Length: 167
Image (cartoon, rainbow, N blue to C red; front, top):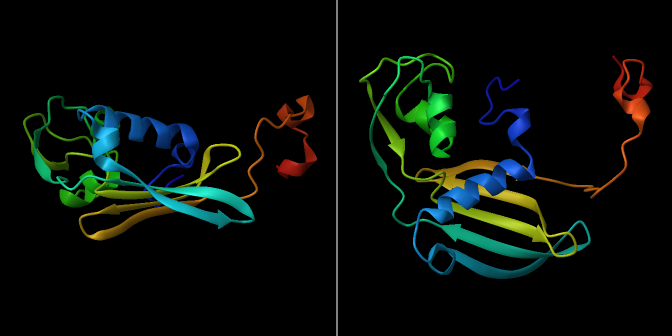
């Protein structure tokens, strides 16, 4: 599901992004005033949007000791709300799911990203574009278009014979 990608399909939605931001900002006193900046308005796909910048100037890597033989780059990143790709690449690991050795020392970031620019649609208050940067440059970029908020899903869509899924 994620070959050569930073994220799994399940993590590309709004809830995952919100949980990362909530955790990242929640660990610093007065974080919203210190790290979050409104950068003006823009228009995306005909919709009026806000540009919001989140910057962690103290972004850095630190030493982390693996505490359990069953930990992986993915499980550590998930537990600490980090980008697992940064954990993988900083430690030259070959797989997100390879089990690490208890006592192994890893280099991990102190936050998900150094800088994030989020474009939020004003009418539905949902992001339509997200750019994430680490200390080396652009790390991830996601765009969401044709948003349909609170749309109805028909019962027939939950059947094996639903024609639009082409199974």
